[in-house]
Length: 103
Image: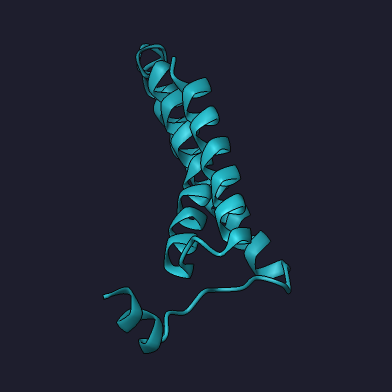
């Protein structure tokens, strides 16, 4: 019901982050926070959409449960395979200097 509102909020967050970062008004720690929420956008939308269909799925009985578990396992396996197969996967590490500046 609120997926469109979340999408608009995410677009505004990303656009404002880019604008403020280009002008030098946004600390790097805040940019990492926006990067985090950008990564959380898809799981949030999926959870909101899935929440609308929980009652219908549970009325399916055991078949709904089996399909749910199978899709969860399939998703985890595909994501692990994609992460291993891509050579450009980067992880961000916080240095003590960045941590001290944030405090």
